Image (tube, rainbow, N blue to C red):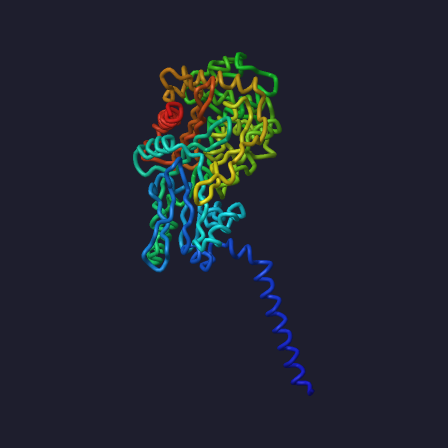
Length: 489
């Protein structure tokens, strides 16, 4: 064999080997990841040809597959689209989000827990059906949260989260603005593409689930964490006096730039009762307390509540709430009032309130209560689990007393419920930008002596004059409605 033929033969052999290696890599090593890739059209087309399982709230589907008379056999439908879109996400020809993505194996029927169902379908020559997912959401609480947030004036950007303190069940999760997932699940692919492009270009980010994907300065609601650190240090109880005063000069600073005030609230001149400091949301008190306990103790306490970690496993993606490290004394003081670089999701702040309500135990939040077969037989039920003992039961009791005082005689009074003892805290966080209004926050739980629900409300933007933005006035009534929906259920 002459040299040119030998060279061409070797080249062809190398091409053949490369082809075999590539085929082996794609079919064996990459097969699972390619199947799971939401851009895989072949997988999606196959999924459109089977009856995808339902996502249920109570007995009612909030996502289901209905027969279709076009080239696909089934159409994904969302009966209550706007209220639940941030939770369900959407199942479209192009991609999936929310629970449609995180629970795809169950809904599509590919989950190993559905093996028996698949086998029965195969033997009986019936088409394979997906399993269903039962959520922890309480329909009445979800409605109260959605209607309360939506009733605010203008184009509202915000979120509400409600938790069962004793289990971590997510009872409500609302995010505005929202969208209609039916338009993204349409079989008119041009319409889907146009709708997606429009939503993606919208500056208000309607595709974002603000409950778990938006982090903002939590403002005075973070004073719960600062108070927890101060009491856990052993230096204070709810009945003690704490630093007061009209102003507090941050360490390492001078002049107006480092001066903390209380915006006219009554915070005494020297030492004041802890209950007064919480009820009046005294910035001077909590900036001073943060520096007393120190940066290390502050970050340890914040992380015990869940900051700087991931904890939501059944609905993704989750943004991490942030408490900064390596702060100087001035930054530590600012962090004590929920400013500087402290950032939290509404879910995180609901977890802080829930932990106080649950004797200091932080429960892992979850939204999928049960995995069911296509016939609604329970295949697996989620067990609650502890994330941490963030504070002692005694500290939780002290904090509850402070928060009850804040509702009964302080800034959180709009959340008061007749005949029910409510614990709550307001927050108004500066955005740090002159052209961006402050963020309004509110956290609460009730009944204080036997908590059934903890709530966090975050209002990022609404058509409200800057001077009228206050967590109590805006978020308090929403939290109250959600708490009543659970307590009166």
